[in-house]
Length: 293
Image (cartoon, rainbow, N blue to C red):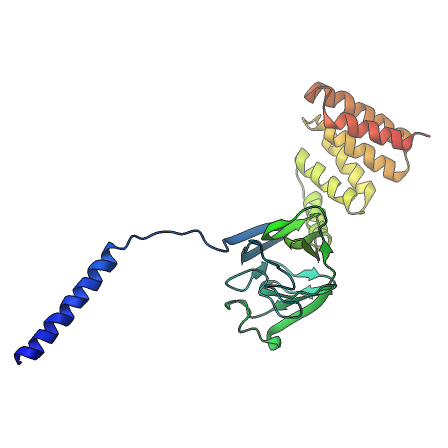
Protein backbone atom coordinates (compact mmCIF):
# COMPACT_ATOMS: atom_id res chain seq x y z
CA UNK A 1 0.00 0.00 0.00
CA UNK A 2 1.51 3.35 -1.02
CA UNK A 3 1.79 6.25 1.38
CA UNK A 4 -1.06 8.20 -0.23
CA UNK A 5 -3.49 5.28 0.06
CA UNK A 6 -2.38 4.59 3.62
CA UNK A 7 -3.04 8.21 4.51
CA UNK A 8 -6.56 8.03 3.06
CA UNK A 9 -7.38 4.91 5.04
CA UNK A 10 -6.09 6.45 8.25
CA UNK A 11 -8.10 9.62 7.61
CA UNK A 12 -11.30 7.65 6.96
CA UNK A 13 -10.87 5.57 10.08
CA UNK A 14 -10.20 8.69 12.11
CA UNK A 15 -13.41 10.24 10.75
CA UNK A 16 -15.45 7.18 11.69
CA UNK A 17 -13.96 7.21 15.14
CA UNK A 18 -14.88 10.89 15.53
CA UNK A 19 -18.49 10.29 14.41
CA UNK A 20 -18.82 7.33 16.79
CA UNK A 21 -17.45 9.42 19.63
CA UNK A 22 -19.90 12.23 18.89
CA UNK A 23 -22.83 9.78 18.83
CA UNK A 24 -21.65 8.29 22.10
CA UNK A 25 -21.62 11.76 23.66
CA UNK A 26 -25.13 12.69 22.40
CA UNK A 27 -27.56 12.56 25.35
CA UNK A 28 -30.65 10.37 25.04
CA UNK A 29 -33.50 12.83 25.64
CA UNK A 30 -37.06 11.57 25.99
CA UNK A 31 -39.17 14.37 24.50
CA UNK A 32 -42.96 14.60 25.01
CA UNK A 33 -44.98 13.16 22.13
CA UNK A 34 -46.70 15.70 19.92
CA UNK A 35 -49.78 13.44 19.92
CA UNK A 36 -49.65 11.21 23.00
CA UNK A 37 -50.71 7.58 22.62
CA UNK A 38 -53.78 6.43 24.52
CA UNK A 39 -55.38 3.05 25.22
CA UNK A 40 -59.01 3.24 26.33
CA UNK A 41 -60.73 0.19 27.81
CA UNK A 42 -64.43 0.09 28.55
CA UNK A 43 -66.89 -2.69 29.39
CA UNK A 44 -70.45 -2.20 28.14
CA UNK A 45 -72.79 -4.91 29.37
CA UNK A 46 -70.82 -8.13 28.80
CA UNK A 47 -68.63 -6.68 26.03
CA UNK A 48 -65.05 -5.48 26.49
CA UNK A 49 -64.04 -2.69 24.13
CA UNK A 50 -60.53 -1.35 23.60
CA UNK A 51 -59.57 1.72 21.58
CA UNK A 52 -55.91 2.44 20.76
CA UNK A 53 -55.25 5.86 19.27
CA UNK A 54 -53.12 9.00 19.43
CA UNK A 55 -54.37 12.37 20.66
CA UNK A 56 -53.41 15.46 18.67
CA UNK A 57 -54.04 18.96 20.05
CA UNK A 58 -55.64 22.05 18.57
CA UNK A 59 -52.55 24.20 19.22
CA UNK A 60 -54.16 27.30 17.76
CA UNK A 61 -54.99 25.66 14.44
CA UNK A 62 -58.22 25.37 12.49
CA UNK A 63 -59.17 21.72 12.87
CA UNK A 64 -62.13 20.48 10.85
CA UNK A 65 -62.12 22.09 7.45
CA UNK A 66 -58.47 23.00 8.15
CA UNK A 67 -55.77 20.49 9.07
CA UNK A 68 -58.48 17.79 8.90
CA UNK A 69 -60.15 18.52 5.54
CA UNK A 70 -63.83 17.93 4.98
CA UNK A 71 -64.68 15.15 2.59
CA UNK A 72 -61.43 13.18 3.04
CA UNK A 73 -60.71 9.98 4.95
CA UNK A 74 -59.17 10.76 8.36
CA UNK A 75 -57.28 8.36 10.62
CA UNK A 76 -59.46 9.64 13.52
CA UNK A 77 -56.50 10.72 15.60
CA UNK A 78 -52.80 10.87 14.77
CA UNK A 79 -49.93 8.54 13.88
CA UNK A 80 -51.20 4.94 13.49
CA UNK A 81 -54.79 4.49 12.34
CA UNK A 82 -57.13 4.33 15.30
CA UNK A 83 -57.78 0.72 16.29
CA UNK A 84 -60.93 -0.56 18.01
CA UNK A 85 -61.53 -4.07 19.35
CA UNK A 86 -64.82 -5.68 20.40
CA UNK A 87 -64.85 -8.90 22.45
CA UNK A 88 -68.39 -9.76 21.29
CA UNK A 89 -70.56 -8.68 18.35
CA UNK A 90 -71.85 -5.11 18.66
CA UNK A 91 -74.24 -2.87 16.78
CA UNK A 92 -73.10 0.59 15.70
CA UNK A 93 -75.85 2.91 14.49
CA UNK A 94 -77.95 -0.07 13.40
CA UNK A 95 -75.08 -1.91 11.70
CA UNK A 96 -74.03 -5.28 13.13
CA UNK A 97 -70.26 -5.63 13.65
CA UNK A 98 -68.76 -9.04 14.53
CA UNK A 99 -66.29 -9.41 17.38
CA UNK A 100 -62.77 -8.51 16.28
CA UNK A 101 -60.27 -5.72 15.75
CA UNK A 102 -60.85 -2.95 13.20
CA UNK A 103 -59.48 0.40 12.10
CA UNK A 104 -61.80 3.31 12.81
CA UNK A 105 -61.69 5.82 9.96
CA UNK A 106 -63.95 8.82 9.46
CA UNK A 107 -64.82 11.30 6.73
CA UNK A 108 -65.63 14.61 8.45
CA UNK A 109 -68.27 16.89 7.00
CA UNK A 110 -69.84 20.17 8.07
CA UNK A 111 -73.31 18.64 8.41
CA UNK A 112 -72.62 14.90 8.36
CA UNK A 113 -69.78 12.49 9.13
CA UNK A 114 -69.15 9.09 7.60
CA UNK A 115 -67.92 6.45 10.04
CA UNK A 116 -65.85 3.66 8.48
CA UNK A 117 -65.11 0.31 10.13
CA UNK A 118 -62.17 -1.18 8.23
CA UNK A 119 -60.85 -4.74 8.45
CA UNK A 120 -57.29 -3.49 7.89
CA UNK A 121 -56.44 -2.52 11.45
CA UNK A 122 -52.64 -2.32 11.12
CA UNK A 123 -51.65 0.71 9.08
CA UNK A 124 -50.05 4.12 9.49
CA UNK A 125 -52.52 6.95 9.19
CA UNK A 126 -54.96 6.76 6.31
CA UNK A 127 -52.32 6.80 3.58
CA UNK A 128 -52.89 3.14 2.70
CA UNK A 129 -56.65 3.25 3.24
CA UNK A 130 -58.51 1.16 0.69
CA UNK A 131 -62.29 1.17 0.44
CA UNK A 132 -62.26 -2.55 -0.40
CA UNK A 133 -61.26 -3.19 3.24
CA UNK A 134 -64.42 -1.50 4.55
CA UNK A 135 -66.59 -3.79 6.63
CA UNK A 136 -69.20 -1.08 7.22
CA UNK A 137 -69.97 2.58 6.56
CA UNK A 138 -72.68 4.69 8.12
CA UNK A 139 -73.57 8.35 8.64
CA UNK A 140 -73.85 10.32 11.88
CA UNK A 141 -74.63 13.93 12.70
CA UNK A 142 -71.99 15.99 14.55
CA UNK A 143 -72.85 18.32 17.42
CA UNK A 144 -71.22 21.75 17.87
CA UNK A 145 -70.05 22.78 21.34
CA UNK A 146 -71.05 26.36 22.11
CA UNK A 147 -69.46 27.21 25.45
CA UNK A 148 -66.20 25.29 25.46
CA UNK A 149 -63.34 24.05 23.32
CA UNK A 150 -61.66 20.66 23.70
CA UNK A 151 -57.94 21.14 23.17
CA UNK A 152 -56.93 17.48 22.87
CA UNK A 153 -58.72 14.98 20.65
CA UNK A 154 -60.56 12.39 22.75
CA UNK A 155 -62.55 9.23 22.22
CA UNK A 156 -65.00 8.61 25.07
CA UNK A 157 -67.73 6.25 26.18
CA UNK A 158 -70.68 7.99 27.81
CA UNK A 159 -74.31 7.26 28.75
CA UNK A 160 -73.33 3.67 29.55
CA UNK A 161 -76.21 1.29 30.24
CA UNK A 162 -76.37 -2.51 30.35
CA UNK A 163 -77.04 -2.81 26.64
CA UNK A 164 -75.94 0.50 25.15
CA UNK A 165 -73.47 3.36 25.24
CA UNK A 166 -72.52 6.45 23.30
CA UNK A 167 -69.09 6.35 21.66
CA UNK A 168 -68.10 9.99 21.17
CA UNK A 169 -65.31 11.56 19.10
CA UNK A 170 -64.53 14.94 20.65
CA UNK A 171 -62.18 17.67 19.43
CA UNK A 172 -62.13 21.45 19.26
CA UNK A 173 -65.83 22.40 19.15
CA UNK A 174 -67.13 19.18 17.60
CA UNK A 175 -68.66 16.07 19.16
CA UNK A 176 -69.42 13.10 16.90
CA UNK A 177 -71.79 10.65 18.64
CA UNK A 178 -71.93 6.97 17.62
CA UNK A 179 -74.68 4.86 19.19
CA UNK A 180 -73.47 1.45 20.30
CA UNK A 181 -75.62 -1.49 21.37
CA UNK A 182 -74.66 -4.89 22.75
CA UNK A 183 -76.70 -8.00 23.52
CA UNK A 184 -77.09 -8.87 27.19
CA UNK A 185 -80.59 -10.11 27.99
CA UNK A 186 -80.63 -13.12 25.68
CA UNK A 187 -77.26 -14.21 27.05
CA UNK A 188 -77.90 -13.62 30.74
CA UNK A 189 -81.50 -14.77 31.23
CA UNK A 190 -80.75 -18.46 30.52
CA UNK A 191 -77.83 -18.29 32.97
CA UNK A 192 -80.02 -16.72 35.65
CA UNK A 193 -82.77 -19.27 35.12
CA UNK A 194 -80.28 -22.14 35.36
CA UNK A 195 -78.68 -20.75 38.52
CA UNK A 196 -82.01 -20.22 40.23
CA UNK A 197 -83.26 -23.69 39.25
CA UNK A 198 -80.13 -25.40 40.58
CA UNK A 199 -80.44 -27.14 43.95
CA UNK A 200 -78.92 -25.60 47.04
CA UNK A 201 -79.09 -22.33 48.89
CA UNK A 202 -78.52 -19.12 46.95
CA UNK A 203 -76.66 -16.08 48.25
CA UNK A 204 -78.50 -12.89 49.11
CA UNK A 205 -76.42 -11.10 46.47
CA UNK A 206 -77.52 -13.54 43.74
CA UNK A 207 -81.19 -13.12 44.65
CA UNK A 208 -80.78 -9.34 44.61
CA UNK A 209 -78.81 -9.16 41.34
CA UNK A 210 -81.14 -11.56 39.53
CA UNK A 211 -84.27 -9.72 40.68
CA UNK A 212 -82.70 -6.35 39.79
CA UNK A 213 -81.83 -7.53 36.28
CA UNK A 214 -85.34 -8.85 35.70
CA UNK A 215 -86.86 -5.60 36.95
CA UNK A 216 -84.58 -3.39 34.85
CA UNK A 217 -85.02 -5.46 31.69
CA UNK A 218 -88.78 -6.03 31.77
CA UNK A 219 -88.56 -9.74 32.49
CA UNK A 220 -90.86 -11.86 34.69
CA UNK A 221 -91.73 -9.64 37.67
CA UNK A 222 -93.37 -12.50 39.57
CA UNK A 223 -90.07 -14.36 39.57
CA UNK A 224 -88.22 -11.18 40.52
CA UNK A 225 -90.54 -10.66 43.51
CA UNK A 226 -90.14 -14.31 44.59
CA UNK A 227 -86.36 -13.94 44.49
CA UNK A 228 -86.45 -10.74 46.54
CA UNK A 229 -88.64 -12.39 49.17
CA UNK A 230 -86.34 -15.42 49.26
CA UNK A 231 -83.36 -13.15 49.79
CA UNK A 232 -85.14 -11.22 52.55
CA UNK A 233 -85.99 -14.41 54.43
CA UNK A 234 -82.51 -14.49 56.01
CA UNK A 235 -82.69 -10.82 57.07
CA UNK A 236 -79.53 -9.93 55.11
CA UNK A 237 -77.33 -6.90 55.64
CA UNK A 238 -78.66 -5.41 52.40
CA UNK A 239 -82.30 -5.83 53.45
CA UNK A 240 -83.02 -2.10 52.99
CA UNK A 241 -81.74 -2.29 49.39
CA UNK A 242 -83.80 -5.39 48.69
CA UNK A 243 -86.89 -3.80 50.22
CA UNK A 244 -86.47 -0.76 47.98
CA UNK A 245 -86.29 -3.09 44.99
CA UNK A 246 -89.36 -4.93 46.28
CA UNK A 247 -91.21 -1.61 46.48
CA UNK A 248 -90.25 -0.84 42.88
CA UNK A 249 -91.43 -4.24 41.67
CA UNK A 250 -94.75 -3.97 43.52
CA UNK A 251 -95.27 -0.47 42.13
CA UNK A 252 -94.64 -1.75 38.61
CA UNK A 253 -97.17 -4.53 39.23
CA UNK A 254 -99.77 -1.99 40.35
CA UNK A 255 -99.72 -2.86 44.08
CA UNK A 256 -99.41 0.69 45.42
CA UNK A 257 -100.19 -0.18 49.06
CA UNK A 258 -97.65 -2.98 49.10
CA UNK A 259 -95.06 -0.77 47.43
CA UNK A 260 -95.53 2.04 49.96
CA UNK A 261 -95.28 -0.40 52.89
CA UNK A 262 -92.06 -1.90 51.51
CA UNK A 263 -90.59 1.55 50.86
CA UNK A 264 -91.30 2.69 54.42
CA UNK A 265 -89.71 -0.45 55.83
CA UNK A 266 -86.69 0.09 53.57
CA UNK A 267 -86.26 3.63 54.91
CA UNK A 268 -86.42 2.47 58.53
CA UNK A 269 -83.67 -0.09 57.97
CA UNK A 270 -81.60 2.32 55.86
CA UNK A 271 -81.61 4.90 58.68
CA UNK A 272 -80.42 2.24 61.14
CA UNK A 273 -77.68 1.10 58.75
CA UNK A 274 -76.52 4.37 57.18
CA UNK A 275 -78.14 7.19 59.11
CA UNK A 276 -80.79 9.73 58.15
CA UNK A 277 -78.69 10.89 55.21
CA UNK A 278 -78.94 7.54 53.44
CA UNK A 279 -79.74 7.92 49.75
CA UNK A 280 -82.33 5.14 50.12
CA UNK A 281 -84.44 7.39 52.35
CA UNK A 282 -84.71 9.95 49.55
CA UNK A 283 -85.32 7.28 46.89
CA UNK A 284 -88.08 5.72 48.97
CA UNK A 285 -89.68 9.11 49.59
CA UNK A 286 -89.66 9.83 45.87
CA UNK A 287 -91.22 6.44 45.14
CA UNK A 288 -93.95 6.95 47.75
CA UNK A 289 -94.69 10.44 46.41
CA UNK A 290 -95.06 9.06 42.89
CA UNK A 291 -97.67 6.57 44.11
CA UNK A 292 -99.80 8.95 46.13
CA UNK A 293 -102.56 11.05 44.56
